[in-house]
Length: 143
Image (cartoon, rainbow, N blue to C red; front, side, top):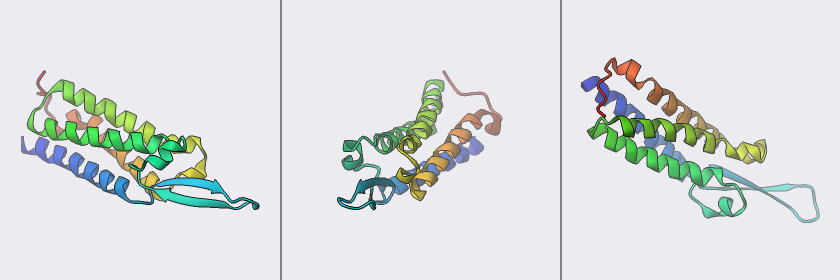
């Protein structure tokens, strides 16, 4: 029981770290052209800013929403072992990784170091969730 709780709290701690990184004002990159020259103006925003969303960079805001959803589901899962919640957490972690990599579709210049760290941490969360049953050595998640 204690092993399961510690494992869940580690996942929640990583989620809190991801959320803190998403609130930083330099996680999302938008590049604007400078009129009359070939230079690009690089502006950075928080994952929860609507400006990147308005410029068709949908991934960061969707990543932030999925992160909050994952935190809520994880808190519920800490108190109630339920296979449906566990499956939602697995699915949301995969979706979160995919959304966090969406800025790469616009080009590498639209991806920041903080965005990379967020993507890696979400991938680690996904791996931890998928290894949950194996690590806790207990298949007693209730239906």
